[in-house]
Image (cartoon, rainbow, N blue to C red; front, side, top):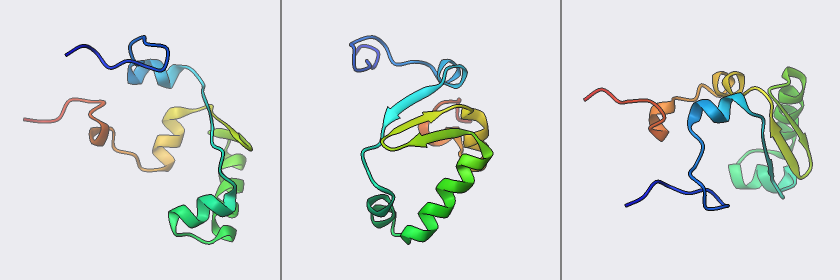
Length: 91
């Protein structure tokens, strides 16, 4: 089995490479739809989006999202890279 490939057929970037570069993607969901999908109120999603904009780990100008500071966003989200196997797990 070969290495996983990205949309262009090349290999997927390593976690360190992703953290160094800004990551941009389209999120074609309104805050209302996102709130519904997440089981949150639209007001709560709106407040969280405004809070994230103020902290500046990302920009979100519908539909474009750009992650500017991957490490800060991961810290804010209390993300554990083990769940994606980005770091080695203890055996």
